[in-house]
Image (cartoon, rainbow, N blue to C red; front, top):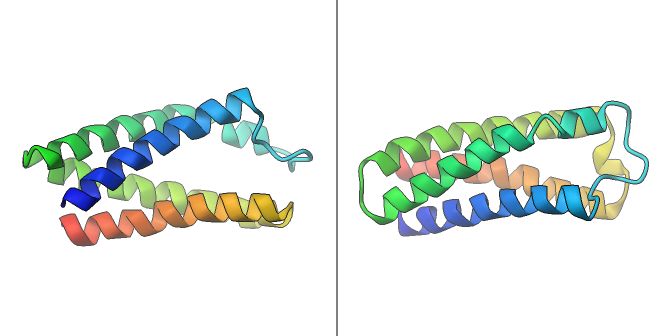
Length: 125
């Protein structure tokens, strides 16, 4: 459980850093497909809520508070949904084909969300 808790905290920090970088250094592709920016701009609020959830869940797990288990399972579902939604959008809109950098960064984030969501559900549940 300690490993899951630490990874939850790191994932929350990663989400927060992603959005800081997205809005400050421009992580969007140079020629994004139509709807890309509208799609991406719909995520800061839900990702912010997920970050808070992951932070609280991770802290509660570290404190051996039973609430950490329930919050971790909710976070697992949110991560799975987020990852699946991004994979679907990226495939349908050719995001993975834009460049090697976009492929690597997007695939890593998407697979992390799905894989870590499953790991939380299996380990914590």
